Length: 281
Ligand SMILES: C[S@@+](CC[C@H](N)C(=O)[O-])C[C@H]1O[C@@H](n2cnc3c(N)ncnc32)[C@H](O)[C@@H]1O
Image 1 (cartoon, protein in one colour):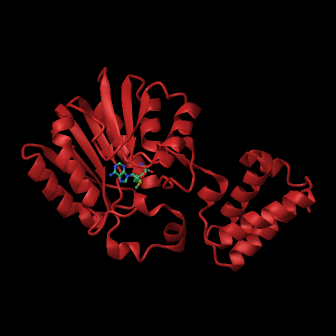
Image 2 (cartoon, helix red, strand yellow; image 1 turned 180 degrees about the vertical axis):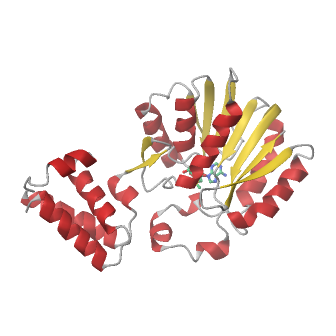
Image 3 (cartoon, protein in one colour; image 1 turned 120 degrees about the vertical axis):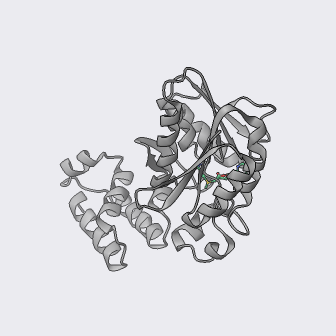
């Protein structure tokens, strides 16, 4: 079978099972199998697949038909223009989370030295993106999951920022002894108990529940973080939190309670949904 035939067959199988992005996903699976770039795939459509490769492709397609996200099958996902290794121990970074990074870069501006914490770092996407774009920053990336931190360590090495991204295992800001942080960013679990039962198979069956559930109302970890952060922030520091749109009022209220004098803003994502709460002290 040629690459062209295999691609056509994969597209047909996924389309029949109503996968909306069948063509894109089939291409990603074939590229993963063959180790090809997008251009290479299209230049080598007449190459032949070995029997072993054909069998492997069938297995990859079966995994996708079982609703495993493409990112777990291929083991990587792009975030902020950088390629990240991910595993079943880490959340798949979402495009809307790029807004946290954009806002942090804007706040960082031209400041010379910065201490930044990424709380709940997962695969390290936020921390690594910031370290790559802010050569003057020291980034502290915290997670409660040792397995997630191993993935983050791989990504720090891969993007050559391991000397400035300090990986810490712990509960929220517990690893930090005293004030000294200029920026605290967090995409903590924020799905409430009701929403946990309504998640798609892709998310529910494959993404780690501790990375998703902010039980019971989705705000458990965000509330705990806000209670801790005041003591760890330098005067003039800022906190950026990713939220679910329905949490806007509750999080703004919490922010006002812990930081009475601060400017609190809510930024929409590209779909127009409230996504990031910015607290500037
Ligand atoms: C929603 S995921 C975000 C991962 C990554 N920052 C991203 O945006 O793709 C939340 C992460 O927070 C971590 N986490 C959950 N509770 C935590 C806690 N109490 N302290 C530190 N990390 C925690 C989870 O292990 C998970 O990696």
